[in-house]
Image (cartoon, rainbow, N blue to C red; front, side, top):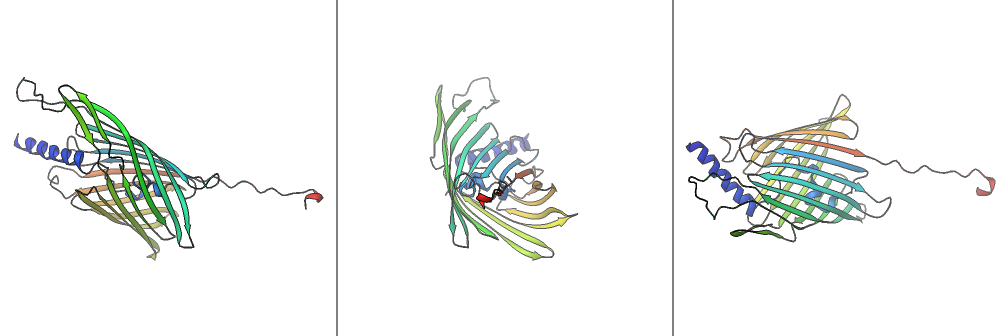
Length: 313
């Protein structure tokens, strides 16, 4: 009974921290989710790419976070300058559910031969809801306990993202509106205050390392109350003529992760990571599982027409 009480107490504290501090998702494959936290990255790469990530955090811990992400981005320079993207993610922790849907646009600015600066903005909505199921020690109703509610508000992100041949760097902020999602539920008004988050990201590719490439990545996040950082390095190589990778990742005060990825067919990639928990939940968590799928489609250029009539020569 004491063990269950301790676990519930820890989860309750984490839920409070998650609600009023770090509200954005945590992903080991964050390098495949740059657009949702920095809209400046939207559509800078050629083609149309769709990426989906699912994360089961702290496996076997009741009420632990579960996240699902879907990003679709397209380079629109053929029609007008810039890139367009749609980003959706669902986050669940304990009794709470959060859904974000944003439309992203990035305007590219060529910085000489150095690279491209993407100036991006994301506009959309955030929906937050709670559906608690309390088990009080008596049959009496406690009016101070939160009850179920759901509310929707406007959400907005902004980011600057510089992309060069072998490296990238970006700064951004999410939840610029800091919307307060509230609803009057007798006898009290339930509310959820979104917090503005700030991100710094970067990456560099070290080429020709043992017949492969070392791809190092970093993501720093803060809401000016809490701070966390992810650092990882992947070894990109060819396996039977197909792209593959393996790597390690570290998240401050949370986990160490192993990453694996493979491309069974061109432009299609799958990835998996397993996080070894190193925080206070290490004794009860069986780690975190994360799966990633990405597919890109490249629109062929329009065919070149040749004039055959002598007058058109």
